[in-house]
Image 1 (cartoon, rainbow, N blue to C red):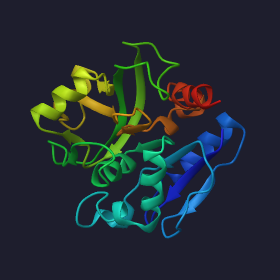
Image 2: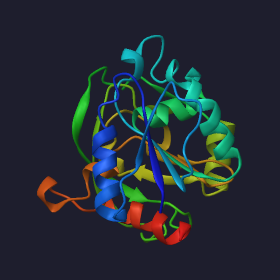
Image 3: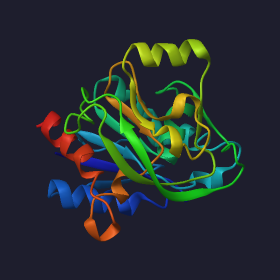
Length: 222
């Protein structure tokens, strides 16, 4: 599986994503600077976590206007798999590739800890190695992870089985609507996720429940 990681100014999880991808796929991903015009041929594009452009204006708003995002959007619209993690999820919503927005955490504090989630949709390229209802633990590290959308959008996401991950009811770290932690686009080739699967791929980090997400992609994109 060929992969690429987009690097924005103040990305801080790009190397984490690259390390996880290399360990699991056996191939180094291309590291693509935000000012480049094109993403090299890839089966998967990752928008990593961090604080792109210092989170000025709104989280992800400036990164969504980066030159490289034109090609990311074009490739996503053609069916290439795109994974946005944390800040990457924020960028996907700002770029219009996913509905809704990410607001300030309801506690108005930065949250950095492992959280428990429930796999809500195992029939996607990102989640086929999981079981519906399976409990997983990924770390979170964000101040604006509170997913919000109007009721009609939320109902549509639920009705179309596009809520991929949901925080366990007792472990919602940010106040996200309906405990939503990650969603898919209509075509189901774009996933935005606030918790960090790339930080749950090595037993030395305390969890390997993120590995099946990348293994799902390897199987789906083979």
